[in-house]
Image (tube, rainbow, N blue to C red; front, side):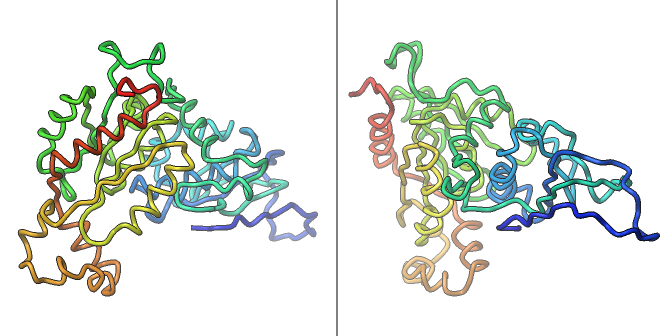
Length: 333
């Protein structure tokens, strides 16, 4: 991942019999970036590629040509509506392109500011992640810029909607249906979504945009918060194991800049399946930071890959009631 763009400008080249002649001349700048790395994981799709490409290209208002190396056609097609908002031109697969393309200006590698974020003080023209969210709304035809009910009140025609992000293989909600039933009893219109690599981005974006509260265990699926309207609430369920720092860096800090209310539900020892896998005095339970010191692979294996959760409904109910109070024009106020 290139954290700082490298700018190249055309110079008059000396005549050289071995230098190929330009077959395509372009008057717009080019942005070169890679489709490799960790793309395919939704968090990395956005934080490593899509947001940096936005940071670097938005200033050109579509008048920029994307040149992509290690291009995965399925991945580009998945996010093509976003790319079309940023560039008026077809994406070029530089690895398979036979043309000799000449540009007056080439930017090699998009600029990275921070996880899922834009630093307005460093961005051309001072734009922010709020502008990125507008690009997403335009790309996918999302209707809600803000989480406000019709006629400034919640009623039977428009209940506040809770979207539960479901997971299957790890960090699974073991009592998901009971969670949904409890939330319904509080007056939520509850939906459950399980995004994966094959999910239709536009369709899922519309579902997320319709939500007022999104709840999920720490993981790539929470990246869909980019589609939440301003004023919505994100509740990140943080698995057991001293993972507050990870939760903060990946979703807490970015959510605040996206104008989303952020809440955390910290999984306790009696809410995790780890308490069934290890004896009470095991370091995994008693001293999580001793596992952290063994490195990322050990931490990930124990606390992310091998843990499922069962939130206490009473505790979760309190969190959802607090979320209701945070919503604009909440009927509970």
